[in-house]
Length: 229
Image (tube, rainbow, N blue to C red):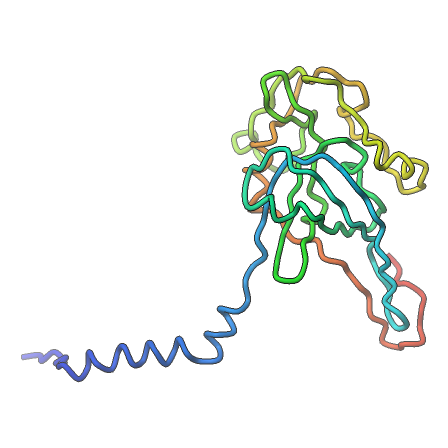
């Protein structure tokens, strides 16, 4: 005959003590202190651009250029968009990004305890439609995504023609300027295949990653030539 282990009152008193010890351990506290940055997704109108000074001194080289962007929030789709009214940073390897040359854009912005930073290469110029939605003209979804997993594209008419931002007009003579996004040219009034902002937000929310500044550190502090790409 098999005997099961008895669980007396003493056993049950040990379990809360063990849990209390685990929760108070340095490892548990460290995991609680490390919080993932919070993501906000919203449509905004560009109000200000300021290029950042990213000189890191000798022994390092900045892989990215950086800009401080300030947008007025027009419509919040997810997260606390109001916390980004003061501005946020964009870091990228190819100068001022294309979306910043438009009056309005769909933005993915992360905020942690120290800074607010845009998602890595994830934003879309959008324009309001006559139905009151916001839309990007084109198919922005990855080519390897099956059609069954892609949000539907829509035929739309814009409430007003696609407009460029006057804030960044001076940057359009820069050698890095990528030109207008295909399908989102100035003055465009209609789109046969448009992605709605709420679909873009839902699809890319789990795929967004913070786009922090990237710095290359040289093994020899006297070396200053950037790494070959």
